[in-house]
Length: 185
Image 1 (cartoon, one colour):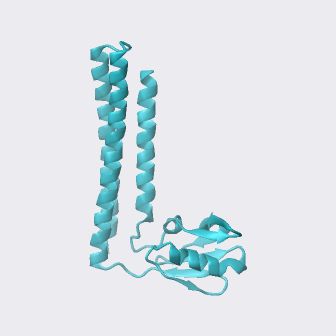
Image 2 (cartoon, one colour; image 1 turned 135 degrees about the vertical axis):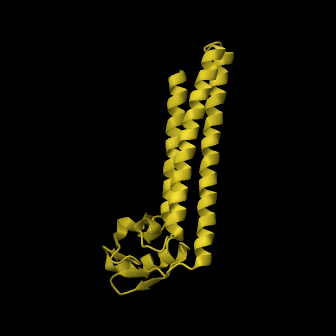
Image 3 (cartoon, one colour; image 1 turned 180 degrees about the vertical axis):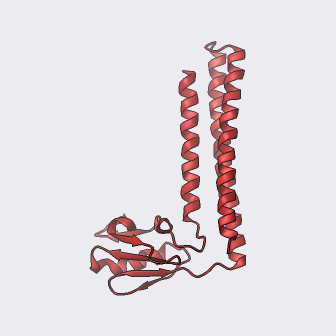
């Protein structure tokens, strides 16, 4: 039973790290990244479809993304979907493909993005701490039900704290790397 609690806590913490990673890759650093278009959904025959499933998304240059739809008839739909996603980028329709040129980031925009990174990092840390709280509550319930001794309970709670510290350090490392990446001109 205690192994399940520990395993579930670790899996949930891994999920929080993956979520953080997804959020950070969506932030624009001045270099083109196809993952920036991940939240874009194109209305394809009445169904909202991820952009990478209706066309080829490539990065021909460091500051450009090109979306070449498999079906030329939906180029306008792809353009409309990118605009309506509010990503702060403007696509240009070239007839059979969409080209997105990313303008260089201003110093002010970089600082705003760093603030966003810090907020995303703090939200991830809160999620990790909530998982720790849930795991500790489960351990305390086992102790109350006399399935664990008090000493074992304390030991497992210390293990959960070590796990929490490890994941908090991963979050800090990842957010600091993103901040450095953003502030590099």
